[in-house]
Amino acid sequence: PRSRIQPVIETALDEAEARGIAAKAVTPFLLQRIFELTDGRSLVANTALVLNNARLAAQIAAELV
Image 1 (spheres, rainbow, N blue to C red):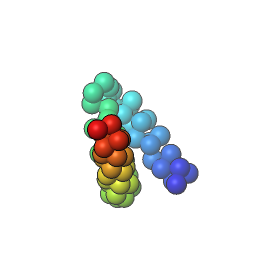
Image 2: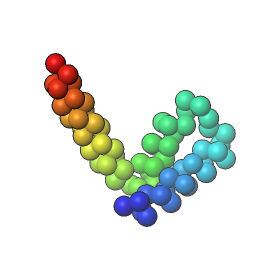
Image 3: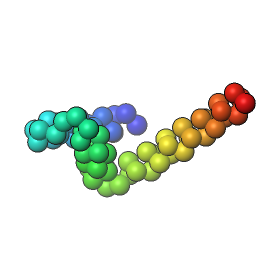
């Protein structure tokens, strides 16, 4: 739920800013830090998102053919 992940994201963003992490280094830092702060639970959610995006992309591609 948003109420659970939002504080984690804000913490990770604050840490990135405090450490001077910028540009292309931000996303990998955030993903790793959120993974750490959620004891790995964010990986399950991110994996599900990737799989759903791939499934949707395949459906769209099939419709275009």
